[in-house]
Each structure stands twice: as structure tokens, then as C-alpha cells.
Length: 329
Ligand code: KG4
Ligand code: ZN
Image 1: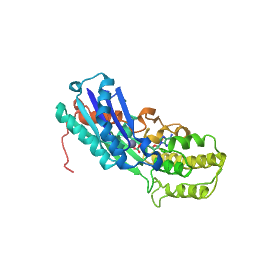
Image 2: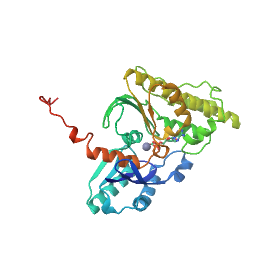
Image 3: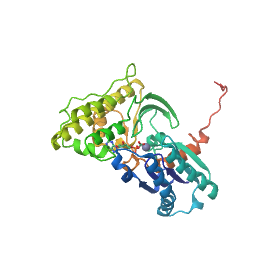
Image 4: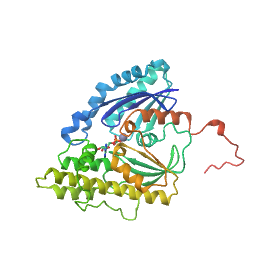
């Protein structure tokens, strides 16, 4: 089965061809990050204009690189949200148009669920229940994964997402957008204990996150000051350590409270090596599943992968068993 995935939720236009839900035949991305750099965050209208310009060439390139023709595609999967409305509409309409023109089935999938699925793609059997940890520019989520498509929410953020906090702190330090990679690079040269920052607690919600107070502490640490490079590195290191330790700590609490057998992670922040170290230190008895580096950030491979899984149904129909009583509840 060949699936064409299409991703356009934010500032990346992506198309990918994935075979049998596991073999990546192509993975094409056109980023509009160059347009947003001077604003310190995504400028939605500029992102939309770029999507319009590049979506068809990106899809063409994905087919060409995969060496397949439109006739050979069995399914078109598109990210239906969450994301920027204009950006989503462009991917969705391109996918619908091609589905009609090529006479192919078509499915929409949840972009955030797809981030999580990126660390499961190609696995025959999942160790369930598991804890899902989504760390991206738009989300900070802890979920209990009962099966693909069935989740129980455990924790979320009361304000900024963790990636967003990295982006804002980078902007305060005069570092480019997206802020995660430069903060991580500067943090390597700094002392994580130089500043005593703390992450927020959310009343009566031990698994929820709050990063806005941490961001304000960084603001006060840098405001009106001409920081030396060493001080900038110390701020980056102290911020990163505080935010990531808070995530590892709350994930550990959540895994324990829900008796999870494994941890699946997803989202752009998963590329952070310090995060990986902290999780390895925290969960030495629990298997950790990370998305491959090229599937952490926004991409269309994860959309194709989850699209196929949803299209075929959550389980093999030959596993079907009889039920003498069936409740309508
Ligand atoms: O998952 P993603 O590509 O997009 C969303 O769905 O939001 O994540 C992008 C976010 C950005 O906020 C970016 O700064 C952050 O991931 N990020 C990182 C790193 N690489 C990307 N954050 C921390 N460390 C990194 N190495
Ligand atoms: Zn994303």
C-alpha cells in the first residue's frame, strides 16, 4: 500500500510517500522559516502564501523521488489540524483536489497524534498501556495511550507550550527563530545552575505544566542588561535545564500513576539531546521510544503513517472475536 502524506499545519509544507506504513520512499519539506525569522515567530499570512506557492511542486517532488506515479498511490492522507487555519486549508484542499482528480480515497488525521505516532511507526506490537509525551511548538501533552486512536489525557500546559517557551527565550537572548536549536547549542557552553529559575506548578493539577512564569524570570534576568556571551550561555543553560527537568519529573509521576509499560515521545523538542539524557536518567527501567530525528519536527511521513493505520482500522479484522452480549453504552 502506497500512501501520499500531506502536511501544512504551520510553517512547513511537506509531502511524503510511505510504503506499507513503514518504508519511507520520499520525504520532501519546504520550510518558510526564512520569512518568519525577523518576527521571532510564525507570521501566519506569510506562511499561507508560501504554502500556496510550493504545495504542488512539493507533492510532485515527493512522487518523483519515490519513483511512483499518481495512479500507483492507494491513499492520500492530510493533516486536518490543529494548526493555522489558512495553512490547513491549503493542504486540505490540495489533498481533496488530488483525491477527486486521481480518484483515490482520502483521509484526514490529527497532526498532534501523528507526532506521537512517529515514534511507533513500523512497530509490530506496541507495549501498552504506554505514556505519550508530545513536546512541540504548539503542545505539551501527557497522555495515557490505550491503543492507537484511544487516549486518556493526563496533563497539558496552562499557558505556553514548551517549544514556544524555547522560541520566546531565544528571542529575549537575541537568538534566531526557531529557538530550540540555538538555545540547546548555547546551553552546552553554560552553567545550568547559574540562575535559580523554576517552572510553574498548576494548582490541583500535578501533571500540568506552566512555562510563562519561567519565561518572565528569564525576561527579568536579561532586561536592560548587556549580557556577555558567558552570561547568555548561563541563561540558556539554566532555562533549558529548568524546563526539561520539569517535563521529565512530571512524566515520571504520570507514568507511575498510570502503570505505563513504555514511553512514546513526539514533537520537535524531542531533538534536544539534554531532554533525551534526562529521560534516560529518569526512566532507566522503562523503555523509551523516540521519533527518528527527521520525524521529530513537522513532516508528512508521520501523516502518511497514521493515515494508513486509521484507514485500515485500528486492528486486524481477522482478530475479531464473538461477543455474547454487546452494550450500547
Ligand atoms: O513539532 P514541531 O516541528 O512543530 C509543532 O507542531 O509545533 O516543533 C517545533 C518546536 C519549535 O518551538 C522549536 O523551537 C522546537 O520545536 N525545537 C526544539 C529543538 N528543536 C526544535 N526545542 C528544544 N531543543 C531543540 N533541539
Ligand atoms: Zn508539529
